[in-house]
Length: 107
Image (cartoon, rainbow, N blue to C red):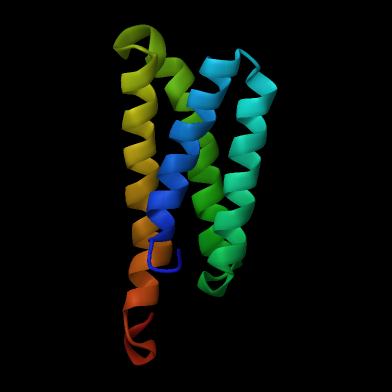
């Protein structure tokens, strides 16, 4: 699992959380999936630093809200997939890409 980028897990957390909420019709269960995914991503990427992780968590929260705002216009699944892609790109840029660079090139 260590070879899977955190960005993929972050994006899938939104998708799987929505899926669980839809299938079970228990929104709180989808919320638990989201919280577990956020906690796992933060724990896994803690070397990225508090500021970068906080930024990813805030973007994730904005994406969560954005999915609710976009759903009436795009449909629920397209909205969730769109914001999951946005979260994945932001997570890659802030966490995964940084981890791929040699230490002497990090800013």
